[in-house]
Image (tube, rainbow, N blue to C red; front, side):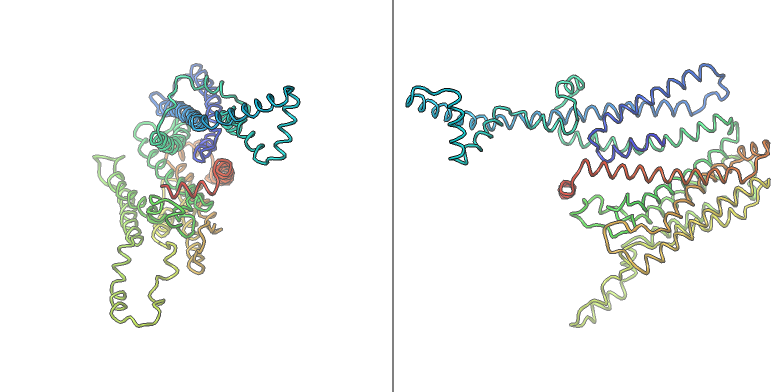
Length: 511
């Protein structure tokens, strides 16, 4: 997944050489798949009917499908360039003929007047006439352009594709339709974006399932405990990556990067109508609670409910109600309804003085919803004091519970900073406390995954202390965050190479 992440970022940036990047990655992936097939043929199948193989082949098909999509878009861009050059040639052909007729008539007159009109004299007379007539040189340049109507196309091809010539590109895209409409190309881009998002999640699933198959855990009825820890820990892991993305400014156009949301004109209407990041966080917490209320007793279906089952269900209810409160706090309609009394009074008793006291406060410029952090803070406290069947398991649960408490405290510091000094710029403000928030979420989610029963039992069998996986995960989290920052910087570089501020503004106005 780490190797595929830069490819996804370059694709999101619409990098002009993304097709060749994808083909190179497909070659590397093919070599890895071949080595995996050889390894599998030489070793016994100790985990029959596992999901890791299916996910791996699904990812291979996705990577191949993305290459096909890029080839289609690439052929369409070449066809569009050729159509534009042909239209230009058809438009300028009558003018070219008139200039050529004028040149022939001019040369005929000189030849009739002197009778000795050579090529050298012609060139000298043309140079003299161009000095005498400043428009003559411009007409000659236009004539050269008319005689070479594909010069601009070839220059554009050279700029985008380096040393590749157009004939090779035709052979490379042989059989691919090039006359695609703008709507079709837009549909292909949307499909590519969706596949990029799905492929990252599938890459994470492939890594987790590969670790399960390699370790030989989650067999029989223990699959429910393993899936619960993997899914829930994975949610917090990706929550941390999104928090890191907010700090880097990935979602500044939606106002998620602790900045002022840009108005329509700078961003399109669809992006402007996106809810706040806190609303999305509250909705995910709400959905998490709604679904887990009915899944906490799944591993012991048909048997009596235990005290631990009731504890887990109560946590799900906490997420259910906390997420609902968070969404209500983020609702602008609810906020307007709550302001009805003072707004009605202001309308009835408004004076002739300026109505500045009735303007929305500065704190409305950014969301400061405490419920997502509060819910995770309570979850961390509960897990820190959640006794398990062994000392190792209890310690690991306390570790990721403490990390979640750290996230909540760091998010509280962020809200205090935003409340004291609300953002006034469209650019991301990057509060330093959000780096701590993302670190705690990423590492806490990974420790959450490790705290399943089978992994803990394997650690106890091999006399491994709880501090060992904790320190490894801390170091891995730091390197992962550094890799994500580098990858997002590559995306920004690709955007600067691909687009200009004028083109981005015109695209936003068009949308």
